[in-house]
Length: 249
Image (cartoon, rainbow, N blue to C red; front, side, top):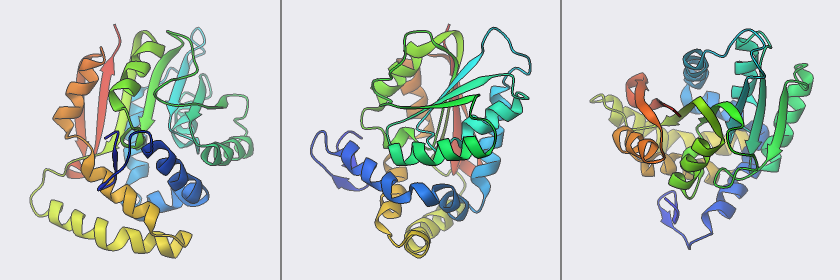
């Protein structure tokens, strides 16, 4: 993963720059494209992720969420609202264009006091040890060059008893659906991206990056290797997406 940009091989250290360029291009239409790419299912998967997290609905000793690579604030907004605005969230993203969209949306939603935005790298989070009660990342981990390092950082910033949840596109495990999904991904998503944003290349990368991501079982092993316990995953929509989860004890 550190030297793969979709199906292309790039020099060490180049992937992050290329990924940043992708998200600068798509920031304004990112959530719209998620609707078109997933047929709206990304909303269902994200709601399921937040339900699994089950944030407290009382202001319990400053319960805090860290949502990484969540620049538009989509997950953080869901968590804060699910808690009846009893918890606070920090959105950390390396891309300032995505963060700008998120800040504007949080302010318009009246959540500016509950959701804060911080620019930072998932591999070197700008937060002290044991700072958060939960860590979430949705459709972002596959864009991180050094995934094991990012997982270790997730473990570092969580308090004891903290939860890790990662929602990511994964390997389809249903016969026929896998062929249909591949055909749609490679033949429809880049043209849709060109139609919506004027540029197909970012979406060609996003489609290819999904195929380079580890299988559900392999990624679960990586989460365990980072120090998490009671690690597991559940597939959504036949494995098109998977929710991975673990605890820090």
